[in-house]
Length: 368
Ligand code: HEM
Figure 1 (spheres, helix red, strand yellow):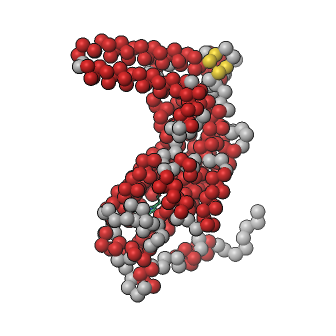
Figure 2 (cartoon, rainbow, N blue to C red; figure 1 turned 135 degrees about the horizontal axis):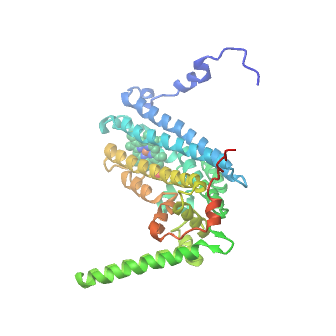
Figure 3 (cartoon, rainbow, N blue to C red; figure 1 turned 180 degrees about the vertical axis):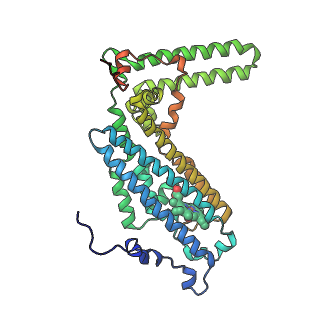
């Protein structure tokens, strides 16, 4: 590529005239400028810029994952980009403290001028949610109505069109389903895993029975019921039909095959070939946790600034936001895998051939 002839000028390159000419407080237009409205605008604009960068990272991750075969180098790039998203998220969390330097009374000076605009209309925030894998049908009824009902037609169609594409969650499922290790030749890891689970349950049951004498009837019944429900949870993982029932009820999102392969990665994360896949899954868990933390912190900020007043977008405010934080987790299935982790001493041994496949091999150089 040929170098530009003209020297690059800082302000032109960054288009600062456009950027810095985009803070226009409404209170000034109505004749009595509120000092804090500039802060309110700038904080939102900075959020939108970071949302743009997060989308840029997620879109590149989606395009890598859409390829029929994910090369190792690309997986390393995906993990690095997810790590960047995590770093941006920590800024997003910190930025709430800047917003909270505004008092409820200062906010009231210009709040009415914003109605009915609200964060409901942050199309980029919706785009991040949808791209990650939160679908309209996964939302609670009230959330679904606000989600679609507050956007103009153009923005609504933009989001609905993105929803027709595969999300990062769908693509992770495809990638996990392609993973070959758990079944090789005569070896079926899950048969051995099931036996290990049985041993663990038998041992738990005998501990409870040994302790029965020290418990009253209600405690005995509660402990045995808990054990029974843990057994059922394991059964619902290992039996395809039961797993599918959980998916149909909306309690799980990933297919059984993808879930089992994700669990295999977590169980054998120290095997060299599985370490990068483990970092990948762990980063997704971090990102989901960071978004959820942001949602709770944002709900607290709304409580602090509004009390129990309704939001400018018409929701119940703090209560609505808390409900959305509770219900809009995307990678919950990956969090739930911890239920199925076994203690190291019960973990089935992998056959030698498979262990070799999961290791890097460096032959030692023999001296002449
Ligand atoms: C004075 C500061 C803020 C207050 C009092 C506040 C309050 C609220 C309230 C009450 C809602 C619910 C919708 C409604 O009824 O309006 C909401 C939604 C939302 N706000 Fe804020 N907000 C503030 C700042 C921010 C900032 C800086 C961002 C960053 C972009 C943001 C992003 C959002 C998003 C994305 C939603 C939709 C959440 C969802 O539906 O799950 N808000 N906000």
